Length: 282
Image (cartoon, rainbow, N blue to C red; front, side, top):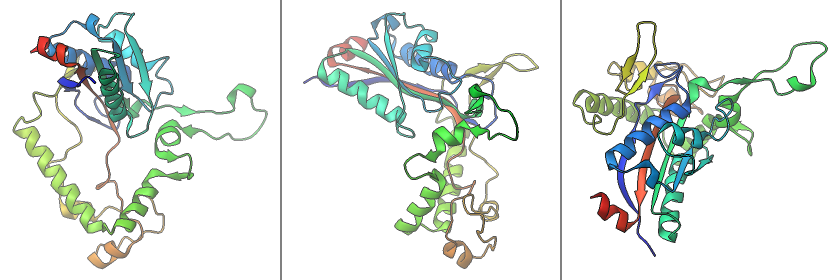
């Protein structure tokens, strides 16, 4: 059985909700990451046998999102491309499938990754084709409906996060403390340039002309434990606003906008190859 090797990796900056990437298609973000990963491996896109990209919020993105990204990245039309939807695990599943192709001998070079633009997820009119005669109609948020709503349990994923925290004994204080540490570490890494080598900058249009986005938008240097404690739980209407430790640990809902993962826009890609190709790349 063959062994697979990761010979390069690249990612765009991670944009915040309605931030710098609000006007950039997910497929363009994916193309930037794929192109950068191929460039860093110093390989010809014509050598790629398959492009596998995770993408969950596909409404409005257009047909065959992975293929769009592959073509925009310079891969020729004969390169196969497939889009994976395993919700949060989509990008990781893409890398796993690339590894399986290499180990099975079905490919020598595969590009894998993930791309998402949550800011551009549209709202849906589910019954509009049949027309309406009278009354108000429901508009669905595709971000929530297709990405953040558990179809089997019929509940928001955030409520499941609350349930998991209770089951595992993870308190509100634990979550807030870890969130603060995460912001502090991320902002330090940005300030000291630790992410510079992995990021592929993205040029976006603005009223002042093209702007290069080269840094993550999510980490907040002004984050503090006090500011985190002031946030109410996001997924419980009756959650207490009492800021004492006792209230925070006893409250049934503990996930907030401050200690949960943000709504993000971005993409990442890796080049996966077999041993013979890895030696030639080196």
